[in-house]
Image (cartoon, rainbow, N blue to C red; front, side):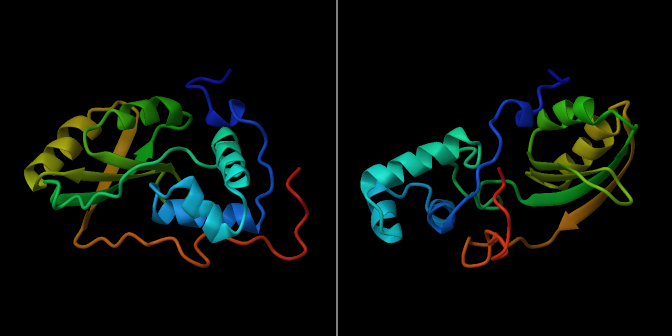
Length: 175
């Protein structure tokens, strides 16, 4: 197994999602506490079918879990920032592990372009954010440079029509 245990090696190959699966995903993204009965009624399938589909989506790794959407400012995390990092080539797994341990880190992405990693953090205030960047991030040996972009306002997009991409009509199955 690869260093750090890639998730792709632990899950089965992706199965194609049909319109009902995508509708179930939209419902659960909007309300992760929706009952099986209400999901089944809204997508016009039996409760047993809805239950089986949700379990398959979980088993296939499509649904990674259920969580609350948090208003970070009201939760005492009033400072938010996207931080870009340039890292030493081939150090992604090591850096990812260290970033996951950072307090307030909520999203980490390996990206292409002028920098290597995009990190979203929420902290109580700018002093804590400064400490996180100048002391914690810049002390990671594999981090070559950082750039901090303060977030002035955030809007979470509710899942709705078009948020989960539909395959083109002539798309081949993913098997």
